[in-house]
Image 1 (cartoon, rainbow, N blue to C red):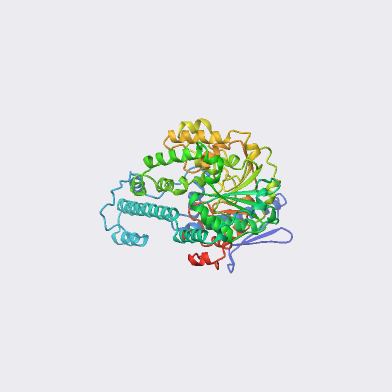
Image 2 (image 1 turned 90 degrees about the vertical axis):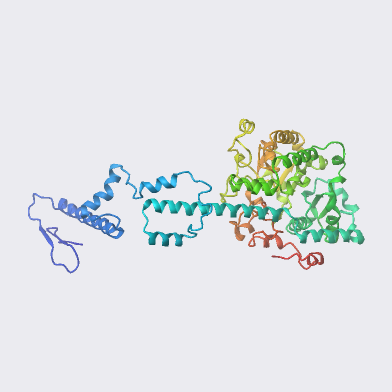
Length: 534
């Protein structure tokens, strides 16, 4: 449509389309009629015609409405919106009724003719030309079948991941055996760590002290290597490695034969700590009770997987409860740091599934404002899956004891790389609070929280946490693969928390190189046990 106006504004010509000579010519001769009013009226009329044309054309293209005039179609399109009415659904009510009926778990039991794919379903519907009721019944059968198969596949995935993450890979077992043999046959593998002249540094607060508790030699070697190689002043770094009795010889052999000079490495077994070997130790009592209650309450993996009523996520949580890490003293020992290191004022505690990618000495410059635990919050961040954890993510707020004492929306924080002010800690009752709530959990048949050390830690350290920058601790690399390699490389510390540990075959392949780069695959022990980069 074209609009032509004469220079004097006395003539207005409207052409409906190109090549059509029909037109409307208006001569404005009378001064009684405002030509400006006529001009604006024609502009509005032109716009309205185009609007009606577009809407009627869309209706014709959609083909969803019966034939109607242009004005009629316009009324159908904008009328309900103007009047606030909702357009009625075109889906037959019978379909809704059938799909909303309760689903029986035996609905498709024994049926072999249920469509397996969308293509099969559509082909069957077109051939049979079924009515709406038959369509809905067939659709529900197909959905029920696929739901059952999806649930089974999900549970099997959780079971296989549980087996893979709970078992000791033969390569790691081989490494421990070879190092234990080396420790017994080679005097160089039995060196005192650290050497006698460096022992005073173990209690010198002018050094940067790090604590690593692990029974995994390969994992500990990566943490130590990444810590020292990225340090600006490695000669001021002291790494205290705590392990158990069975791993002590392999751990000492590895660090005796692979020194990280000029950093100072101490390897010590739990039984060598005087405090831990005297009298009753709460953490040991707690572990004994924990094993007793879990054996009665949880059952084996076969019984867990055979449950047909629970959701896959619940089954996954119960399988995780059987993980050996929850029975490992290494997982609980951090609550006794003030007693294990009575001469130290501040330490940074490291998990064995992390990789350090920057110098960590600036952590000592952070003002803790009298708080005990410097940690990264996990309730806000760009990754909404990993950084969305609050107390309700870990504690069972359906239990009255938890609901009465805590706020479900309280922000959670992360274990894995924590600054602990041991001086401030010794002035609190954090350890007593920790064990009080462990006892309450035992009395409640382990129903107060998800298993692990973080939930009771959230309770014990409540009010004693100083939030540090997320740069210092990126989480989630062991249970989701949304993190890109580029994003992970920008973090100071990355944490493979979750089942997909980097030393397992189920590790995410795009993230594993960040961990594997700190292993010398030409080393005779690594090669001898067939430990590979991927």
